[in-house]
Length: 246
Image 1 (cartoon, rainbow, N blue to C red):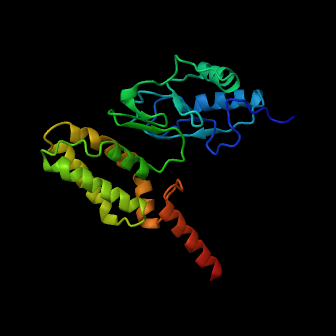
Image 2 (image 1 turned 180 degrees about the horizontal axis):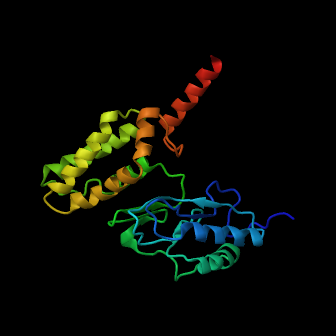
Image 3 (image 1 turned 45 degrees about the vertical axis):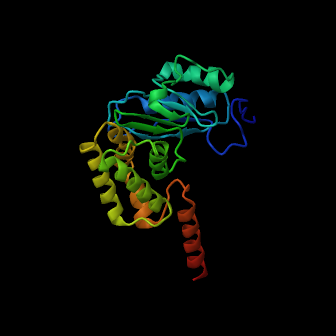
């Protein structure tokens, strides 16, 4: 019997219809248990869907988990347990109903429908297609030209951070750029005139902590794991072509 893809999901969309946060060594929530229930319920209803994965950086005491995301629609459910996971499938995926008791709607802890961040050091993207270097730059661009300019760490530091991240995105990053990112972030957090510098660098510090390997792959291997950095993608394709010709 052919799988019954629900109307809630778009078959022409590259993003998955539903995702869940991935457990880690520091994770204290039941990500894998909820994933199993989602997959079992989806299979039992023959929905023909695969449960995708989010990118999540968490210090272990998760304020939101278990997170379930809907990339095609651009919203998150939070604090989903195994019982509610069945309602997610029957109510949202099958019938298209929003479960408002689970909906993440705090505007102070989300900058878009697809990226969730709070100052506890937690960050999540609605699926794993995001390049975290681009996400870090997104936060800095969001605060561009807002600094009052009274202190050097904020006035100069925010510009330097954007320039370094842009170099890495363009495939021109150097190993010392990681150390410079750390130094500039530390200066902006330790010696600013006000809290703005600490706030604006918070996402960058969090991303550096949890996704440092992505920075290293961009710089050392010339690879964007998410395939979102066009300069790196083209370079990789050229290398493969050259190797094939040899």
